[in-house]
Length: 242
Image (cartoon, rainbow, N blue to C red):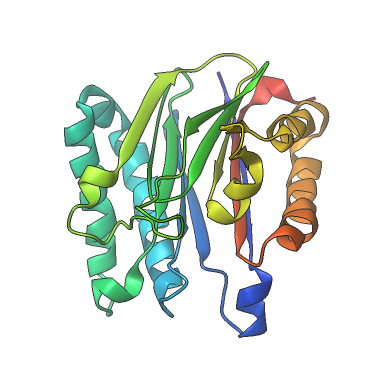
C-alpha cells in the first residue's frame, strides 16, 4: 500500500485575538518505505509551548520513521519509553524550562503494510474505509479540561499505543482536541458524521484539491465552531483517490 499525507494547522480565534501563534504544530518524515506523521498541541497556558510542540513533532516524526521496525518489535511499555525519550530529549535542546514547553502528542507511522500510532493527551486518531472508527480517543484527566503532556515525568505511562495491518482504501485522521472534539460524538461515543464526509473528499479529490479543501474547512467550518487552534493530518492509501 502506497501512502500519501496531507496536513494543515490553523490558529484559533482566541489566539488571534491576543496575537499568539498557532500552538498546533506538525511534522511528516519518510525514511525508506516508512512514513511518520506527528502532531502536537502546545498548552494554552504556556506562552512558549508552540516551540515545544514544534520540537517534539519534528523529532518524533524523524526518529520514529527511522526506528519503526525496532519499535514494532517492542512491547508497548518499551516502545512508549523510547518514544517519550525522543520527545523529552527534543524539549531539552530548547532554552526553556520543561514546564514552559508543555504539549500533547499524537503520531502515526506505517511502512505500507503495518501501522503504529500513539497519543499522550487529548489528540485523537480516527480510521475509515467502509465505516469510520475511533482508534485512539482523547486521554483526559479527572476533569474534562485536564489532559496529559509529554514533558511530565510519568509521560510514558500515559502514552497509549495501537497497532495493526494496512488495508487497501484505508485512511487515518490525526487531530488535536480543537478539531477532534468536532469529529467525535461524545453522546454516542463514536465518530461524528464528518469523519465519513472527509473520507469522501479523499475518494473524489486529487491531492492538490484535497489540501485546499482541508485548509478551507479548518479555516471556516471548524474554526467557527471552536475558539481553539484546529489541525488535522490525513494519511491515506493512494488508491483512495482519483
